[in-house]
Image (tube, rainbow, N blue to C red; front, top):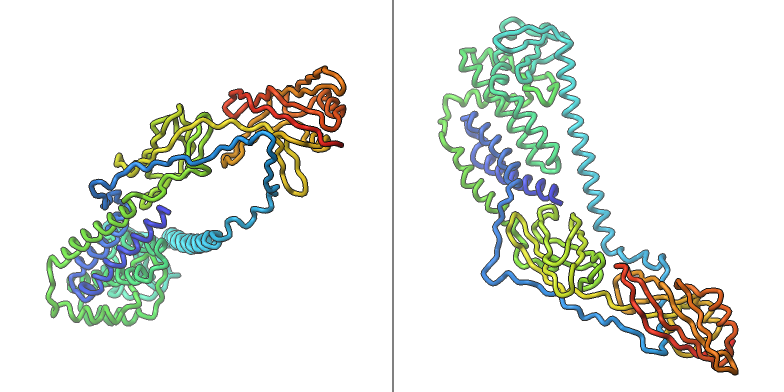
Amino acid sequence: MKTVQFILISTACLSILYGLYLLMYRKGVDFKELRMYLLASIFISVLLPMSNYRISMDFPGNKTVNEYVSNESQGTAEKGSIISEPFVNSSSASNTVLSESWKNDLFEMIKKTYLVVLLALLFRISVHITILIVRFFMGRREKSDGYVLIYNSRLKNSFSFFNWIFLSPEFLSKRESEQIILHEKIHASQYHSFDLILIELLAAVMWFNPLVWMMRKSIQLVHEYLADEGVLNAGIDKINYQVLLINQVAEERLICLSSNFNYSLIKKRMIMMNSLKLAKRTRFKILAIIPLAAVLFLGVACIKGKGNVNPVNAVELVRMNVLYLGIDNPVKIAASGYEPSELAITVDNGTITGGNGEYIIKPKEIGSAVVTISCDSKEIQKTQFRVKSVPDPVAALKTVQENTVNHFTGGTISKKDLLSAGGVEAVLFNFDFDLSFSIASFVMSATLPNSNIVVEEISYSGTYSEAQIKLINSLVKYQKLMFEEVIAVGPDGAKRKLNSMVFTISGE
């Protein structure tokens, strides 16, 4: 999202700056000033979104510590109760995120389309550079005043790329060659190829903005104005030079990155050459970009600072509204107007790990924990949570009948249900956190029929031992069966003694 924000802000700044150019500059005749304005517009548009300066709307008293207080009821089942809950199959949750999926799909489609076009345009630039290099080595080369003249009979037009000047020796007279070389040397001496590479890269990134393509055309035209002006100031006859332009107008532009002598906007160049002596040059008009750049800077700072006032739900626990001791507590953290990578997250009780908006908090002691969100050493928000111990689970026998899960904690039960349970489970009722408790051991006892002898059998796991199964099978109707000394082990490794259970056999 940070990249998306950068592209959108940069595009908006470029559009505004180029809009001012169309209103105030495009008919000017101070071509160096025009070029300077266009280049300054590009650099401002790229650099402003990189600024980390933000204008926050914080007012005194706005900063608060949000407190999350637990209202959970960690129920312990009453003795003799049966708790039923739906039997959940994994396939039943397949439609839980349909409301948001179309947004994600649309964003992914737009992102992929953007990247495909971007890569295609970047590939086009690399192809053109490759063509220039191939043309360089294929032609006959000679040096002239620090420039390299490349003669290639396969070329139908002439162009330059930095200090490389490509010429076609077959179609030009000596006088025409001298004028063309002078024209291309002006392009090279003023580093017009740098401007072209810059605007081509910018157009590849902002290809969806029609104004960037208009700016590309404006830069190319200003380059030709500068070269034409330089040729005429060197003493070349204007009429002869214009005739040369007309003779060459039918030729095609070979490479987008080159400064080409045969540029297609010939009519505008002719008009401008005839207007050079008549028009008044306006100095310091470019200074109008300064207040506009300042306004844009403030606008970008406001955009980046929006949402800094009491961010709503900046800290959201994934599964509950309280932190629990000794376990991993997942939490999502976000602040409107900030990228996740910009945020610094700390907690005053325990440790916090993770990143990209998703973290794990492990409290150290019972009480409270304050999560602090900061950016560039500036505090954004504090959120306070209660820290509690994980409640004791409930010892229960679990059976599944007709897609319904039943937990027996006591009362009347059949031998069939007893055996189908297979053992004792530790269950956290009304607890959203998915914690796993294991049964370490439990004691099963019953009084033998027609005697006072009490038989006790122990299991060192959560499942019945063979002796316990034998004991269950020996039971008769109305006989009592007790589960005692139930020991569970939680995710923190601590052992807990759970509730006892007493059952009355209802029959076979």
